[in-house]
Image (cartoon, rainbow, N blue to C red):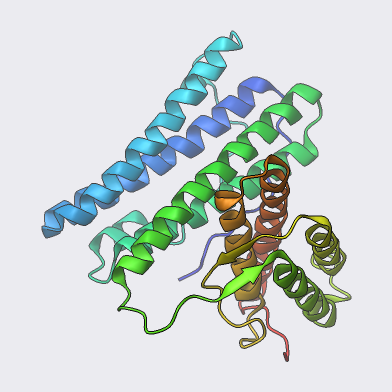
Length: 294
């Protein structure tokens, strides 16, 4: 089964009406997706998991309401009545009917699907902001991207809870890592990306970006936290290496008390999510996971 990835919009969004229409359609698609999965799970008799998907549908429904209110505040028409400038991209890994009828679906898997949807939505809105022809559209797209990033953080916390609830009792404590450890991971990832994609037009800039992330971490006040990140170079899968850094930055933003550090962590998380989306896009185009020889 192919895995849809976040892609740049087919063309720039040129009006606020189009932006609201696209945003509304994307959120409405998410509501329909979760509601369909919930209904299928209820038919199977899994009321607890159906309730989780129903709650995800209500969260996305709240986003639909927010977009409608925002459009009304701007004096625009109802977004649902505005023709879309182009079809909105798919944001989920698998059709709702496949997930809802799967006997293997778990709360962790459900929340993981929601996390990936929000990450792709974040990447989508960063593309929209980068190609916006006017300041008001750019600002609105950046606001959408920021809200998607907040959704990612919320759902990742939920996913971590589901993971720990399902896991057997630990026999050893989680490792403690600091920002300097994360800086070292960024530099290691930069070297690995450089070796794998030095001549790749899309991924070639990623090593320099990773080294810049490391420098930001070096300049921040140290903080330590316990995380399950997995080995730094124990797998050749670069998507995994990029994903654990996303998890780390969102965790730092969760626990940091200093406003400047929270802002730094959120900025690093945004960069890391965009990097993860780029690596997944490369994987989808080439039909393989990006790996190196580390």
